[in-house]
Length: 327
Image (cartoon, rainbow, N blue to C red; front, side, top):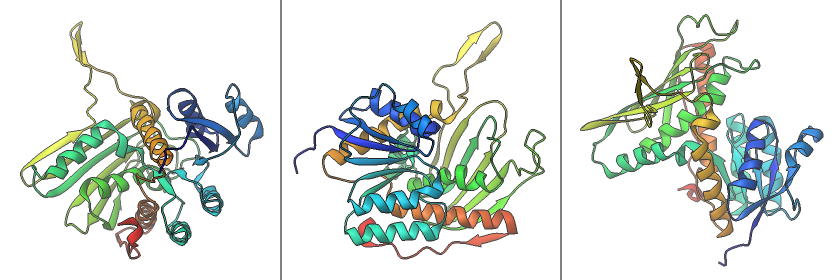
């Protein structure tokens, strides 16, 4: 199939993530341009689109609107057989995710990629490659830490799982090559820096069908920086990423480095690589990267996690049978 000319992308949603993607497509990504900018806040959309020429001829859609709006946009894109990059979550719950999956199956081919950008982060890519070689032996445990400086004012206890731990759910599935079968959520007495009523931090444990355990410390009001770290423990060794020691200084009786303050700084390269890979694949007429199945699986895990948080105890996860399209 001949490679498509410059890809005209409609960006749906111009909040922080959508606005950053508009900038990225316009300034960083090759082979693509912003063809349209859409938001319920018309003035905000105009402000984000200012200075971007050629907002016509939509070839693909990038969805960066709030999660509850994703299903309708995805289904509309499928009706026009348009390629889609949908920021996570695919949808907020497993039932709506299944409806999207069934709609894509009716097309008979993949059309959507889900925005789990950690799969494009250089450190995560290296860790995945190492695990794939088998040098370390079978994975036994995966330890994850996910810390934010402070939570947004609208954040709820369940959003620590649905909006944050969703990334570790996907990373666990991708790195280990296992499906998650059960989840347990524990939480200590909340930090004094957490807003009233917010159960922060939380400690999440995933069980997998490959016999491994994956734990997640999610702490969204740590106060000092944005950190994402992962350490895999295998039968013959361990490997760790996310220490952030690219630059260490020694001066005036001190040593140390800096800590990223938000996700756009920590994962800037991952987002750049993700969008470029999506554009390149789309121009070739292909769909790669995290699939609608991955989005559905993450939604089911997070749904179970919220139940475990609210009700206590261990909650099992029963996924539908994986269709051949996503094999």
